[in-house]
Image (cartoon, rainbow, N blue to C red; front, side):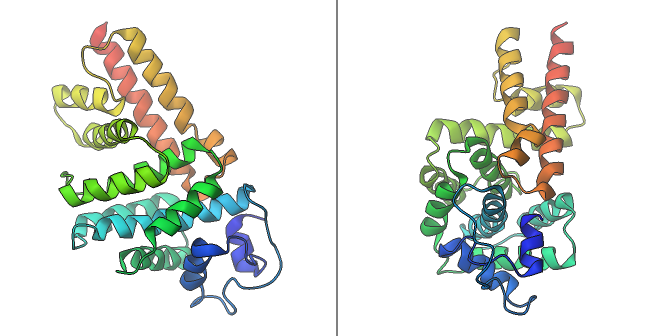
Length: 258
């Protein structure tokens, strides 16, 4: 039974507890009698279903938190959240829960540091999951094509709490911006420029650097590996889309160098 099946089946129990458990409990409480407070189904730290629930809960709450960080939530930012829900193929109830989590993240009293501290524990050194979370959240901040100062400060806060260095965050933001540009670009020159950004490379990188960056990114975003480490199966299409973009970017650079 998947992590969502445990919620629906009422055996979720205090699987997470702490601030993440409270967020999920509040989000589902309106849709299931008894919420997620049954006594059964307790899972230990690091168990896959527990990590999947933590990832889902943290992702949508942080998207709301980052979206509100500059004082207002734009239509572009909401569209990013809706696109993630579409890519996850959430059913009607799951979508309502995701929206509720997004709304909780926007609240003035959202306990960001406590949420981040618990997610870091729950992810249990799964650096690829932390990276995927940051990429989704960063896409929210970049929704309008501009990273505003307060959004940048909030992303730095989130990254630091998750143990991600400023240099790694910079590379991640370059990749996220590059993917958006790569998917949207029409002109071949702009698409090639975005391809380098997607792989976090300069256009002066030699082919050995390009190959290393490509292999590293493909390994980090491999859908099966991510699911095995705790990515909710509902998010496999997001990971697949990323690997397809990475491969297309690499192929474009390789052809341009031929």
